[in-house]
Image (cartoon, rainbow, N blue to C red; front, side, top):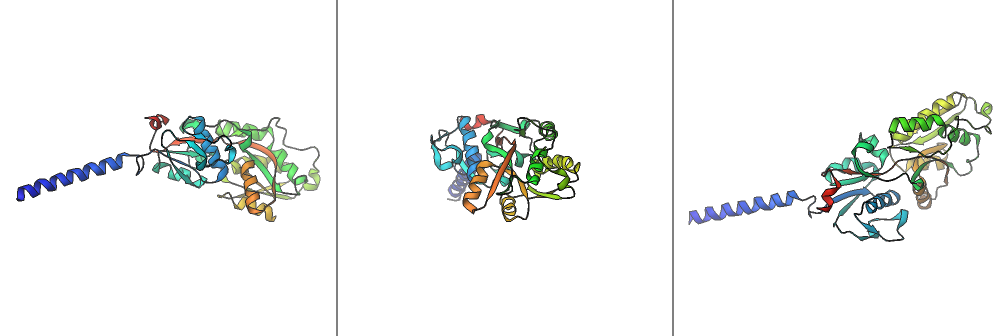
Length: 287
């Protein structure tokens, strides 16, 4: 009898071990491939459109730049999507098979978009990062001086040399950093404040800061690590301008929050990329 019980116990342990090994071998508890995408509407749409370009999903024809996972009509590889705050995606990368991450967050996390992304979107003007001010300040000398500095050849060259394609300038005809219609003499000794995320925006603004300093204008760069406060402080008037977002996000933010922040110029685009977490190639999806 003892021998029978021992055999049964051994069999039970073997089956339990096999079950554990089978459960752990999958990409998630369900065994599906998991892809983390940004949870905010505009960046989630970008991520899904990039996945569609790779032939991994199909979205509704009219989904466009406001697509969400609910707009997926074909999911042939049975991918499981995990929505996460855009800034947190580099942190969750190790826990999923793949994540679709904005270049600025990748760079900030020490991830090189050029060498480490498995696929990257093209430079779409719809997602160009823009310089913004409170409605009514668009034509002020402060706004025009700041925009001219950011649209300079110096800034365009810095973006090319510093980011090597991970960030791309969209300024068609870069200038010398100054606007001939601005009364720089009247701006001497003044301070222009601008809210920005650390990378690459604050880094790019440092080039503009040097340009404005030549005219005795101080550029105060106020760094934020979230996507909410930079618009709120501009709308309240606490900070003059901000530089951290693309137009679809700005439009969505204004509509949801009743703010009156407007774009005055597109400076660069940060191509979104697909990065491997537990996987090292997109081929794993189609196995």
